[in-house]
Length: 224
Image 1 (cartoon, rainbow, N blue to C red):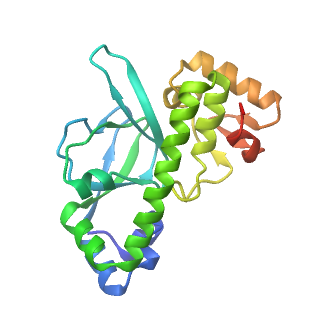
Image 2 (cartoon, rainbow, N blue to C red):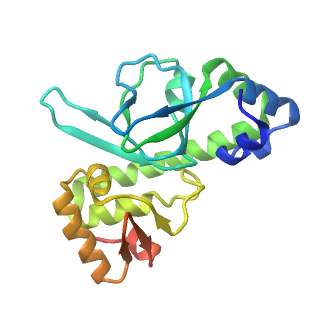
């Protein structure tokens, strides 16, 4: 069980719950720390938790039998994921890996389903999140297939500032160039070149240990 005030800090959906719903949510959530490169869940796992990123950075993707890794998206603090697998009671179709030391909140399936069946506020959040995630992944598919490396890096960074999927994001993102490369599907060296090009165009500013967004709108449309 986690404290009520802590729940409201780590879950953007918590303020919409009633007092009874908050108590049920608190009782069904635990937290766990994961070291950098540690698997949170693996493709094929029966991982029966809805998961929120409390701190750190998580990569969602998969690895083919050939060894080729494909990244679907990155998740920063405030993001919750896995509702589809929990609702359908099916094995995970992706790997979730902590790219750096991370802490996650784990809501068990029984609690998730109780909120799904009883909480209007919780359901409103889920509908909005699922709708936003569909649009997010359509965009990811588009830029992965149609855009060059610099545009992919630009769109990847911009996607981490989605206010619904990543509610805690500010204009500065604590992320390394290696992590940006991992999320964009390119090497750190190529990510460095792409970031310098974006900085030269005035879209972002490279800083020690992260990037600050200067023009999010142009960054999200880069390559059009």
